[in-house]
Picture 1 (cartoon, helix red, strand yellow):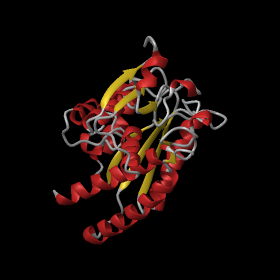
Picture 2: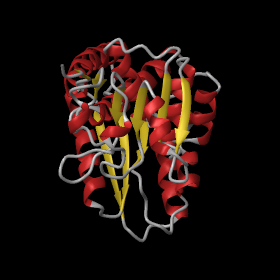
Picture 3: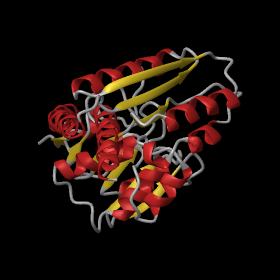
Length: 282
């Protein structure tokens, strides 16, 4: 019997319906124009441009505005910081997204950390990560936060489970591990230098593939009855996990595409709406 499909596409659509109502209510209460999610794209990476367009479309579906800022490939760190400062100072902008990756000459971490904490709806700042890790209020990194929403939506038990996260990036693997730990899982973080990786993964009741390599995690590494979360997406519609042979023997899994990806965007939009609502309460 095939595992339960953790349908991120369907849940994202459901969530957008709820967000549309919240944005309408926000506009009625404020009597002002809808809140804005600002996206910054540096250079002309086609995949990044596609992601930015998808985020703009999602904004429109929930009644928000999207402000897309395209900067040249040659943009300097100082120029990008100035752009972020302008958006920080704009009261209508409730969320700021700097599309990763940026060109090599830019100090990406400095630019991420320039984003105001109350507008860090993509959860990329060092301060936001620290607050989240300490169980203090913060916007979580959008992909792992979206995964946690999806697991909750399908009533996937996390507490007391052994979870393995494969990948340690600062905006995916590390925050994913902290969020699972915060939900009382016992968490192991694996990476490119981990020894005996198949044996470690075989222990896991929850496996999160966040390594950025197509089908890096092999099906026979995964135990029967595991919950399988694939946060990767690569050409040909494959993720970080060799998913096909696992579907018939896992407890639940995220399809690729249609699992984690839609939840990333929906979570980004949800956190922007939350930012606008918090500003209203001040």
